[in-house]
Length: 118
Image 1 (tube, helix red, strand yellow):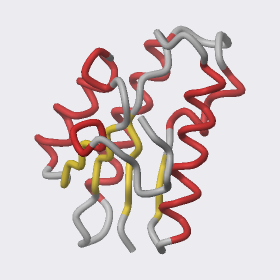
Image 2 (cartoon, helix red, strand yellow; image 1 turned 120 degrees about the vertical axis):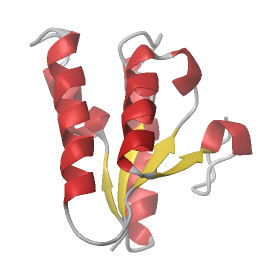
Image 3 (cartoon, rainbow, N blue to C red; image 1 turned 90 degrees about the vertical axis):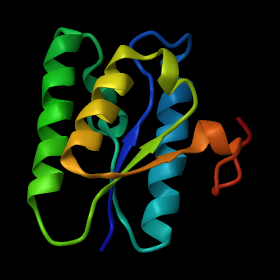
Image 4 (cartoon, one colour; image 1 turned 60 degrees about the vertical axis):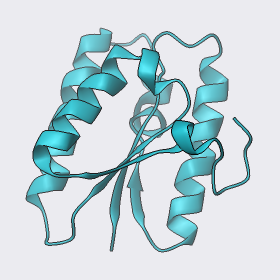
């Protein structure tokens, strides 16, 4: 089963609820095609403000390392709209590249397979 880490901006976005909804649609799509997705936003949205952002960044990077260490199937990092201006997303991408993840940049593709325009 393909493991997918969904990377997208959250801390600096204008509307965190929109980021949450995009993450929800992405996770729903990847589950529907038989993948095992993880979205840090879905995982921690309800905790917004409860901890410093750095706490979440550290956990997100640790999760990427855990994904790389498990199983034989190469994990995938999926980058969503706005990732190029997000320090957290850039850190996730750099680590995923070092760990050998397959990288898919939906911002470059210009659309999402789940039908949400960018």
